[in-house]
Image (cartoon, rainbow, N blue to C red; front, side, top):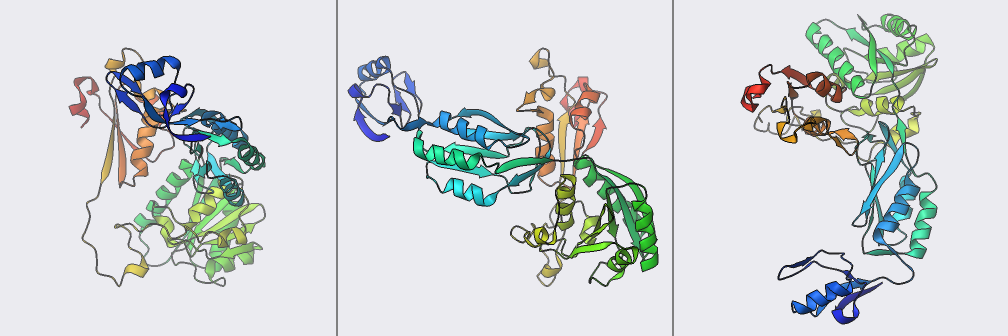
Length: 423
């Protein structure tokens, strides 16, 4: 590809490297100059411009990006449309993005003109989300580099492992002083987390914090045909010989791994009892914030095996963001920060979309997801204490479009009187 400033008289078919404005003429970056364009620019006094001229072995940016995205689209991924040298990959189903990181690095090392970006490995994705994007940096990619990247892309280096509906049971132990409200809150938090990945909490038991009691409770929960039993002690697990791991071994279960390089969530235990997965939860599991054992649950829901080696590779990125409302033990010696306000997000979704003159704007499809769901996901994803959705017009359709998200719905029966009534 040739690139540089050229006289326009010999630049027909070239691509503008930068936008041009001359009088009433407006040509955008990337515009392919025709003979008429050149004549009009000459009449406006523009005689030269910075342009790119593609050679025989150059593949135009959109063509190259689309070919690569289609080759990269492994199971449950699809390529979108290409534009400005970019082509996104979208999930067809909710699940975890499985990435061959070494292959992605190899892909990006072929030529600086060709790039591939993905969300983090094992990150939850859903239809409408962008899981990865191919970007051709200049206006074209060298054909030999494109062919090498296609070879790498065809090795199934990206795929989505879809979530399957898990049936889960929760076992909590009790000690003197454990408040019933805390036990109840833990059930609600656990149920909400499972609902986010299309799974159900189908059983809950409270038992004494003693080996025999815990063993009986786990056996009882496993006998109901659940996929996973979550065990949360009134006192955290601190050793493989502690109450909960000892109870599992007493049952004949197998300890897979204790501890993980994710904080919060260090004191997570992974075990099996027959075909049932067991997760010994840390105390941080009582919080709705993400913690280490959530990563284990996500992988199980996606049908992925979780080994001790998998856990020990979670250290990079395992230091989760500290939040003002959840100080970490390692920060207790530091001066207490000034209290921040508790923030709640409100999504106004009661309107009739009268300016649309027909369809409900909130239910319009935007890249595979209703507009209202995109807004609610963005609001809830910002980490507010609570996200409230005010409904009114077509309430049932709006709530159905938002199913599975951690939201609270409030009905405004006076929605026809205007936005102020929702507020």
